[in-house]
Image (cartoon, rainbow, N blue to C red; front, top):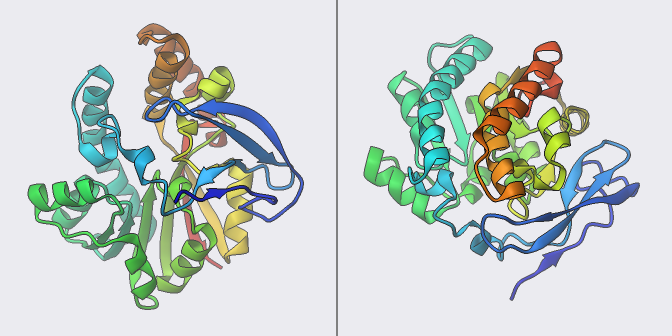
Length: 299
């Protein structure tokens, strides 16, 4: 039986100063519409009336859900794979630079089909991967012989085990938001780094596309973070954000999908223009980037 979650307070900071701001369609799977609400205290947005953890799986059942299927069908998915090969190397460099280690212990949450775990393993890191989707886990086993565990395994991990914990566009999917962050604090080494990449609804491309902005991705994205809301969330769990890093390709990728949702066609030129405008703003202020990588450490 499907259970629907209706928030009466902000799931990020617990403030009751919340209100509806948008009605957004699930363009990927169900075509249903979901309200998005905003907290006037921490500025987080969140999807309202979402399926609970045990009922949401059907909303991920799409051949187009690329992180689970590795599909290369269509121009946008082909582009995704080309870009991913570049971004994997930059992610590895970021981990090494932020931790100050050439190799160490890493936990990757939402490991997908294993591409990031592969590049870190090849660099000599000892990596634990957690992934909820069975199809993705099977592909990781077939392609790389990786055997990822279910996310619940997180709670069995030992204290101060990891030099780095990574969530690449994963935190927005996690029902147990506060339990996860509490556990991250426990299992991270004293000088370890928590690295979280999430879309930024305060970006220029989000403002341009409004309810058609692809990174709302309801109901799979449970939360829609702003830099301010991430700072609130980090502080609640005794983390300090030490760096904000841009994800330059996301402005273009999200704009391409958004054009498709809004107009029913891939207007590549408009997507490039809107992605470029978003990135130009982020050059001046990284907190305006379409997606941001937050680097956190314990305080």
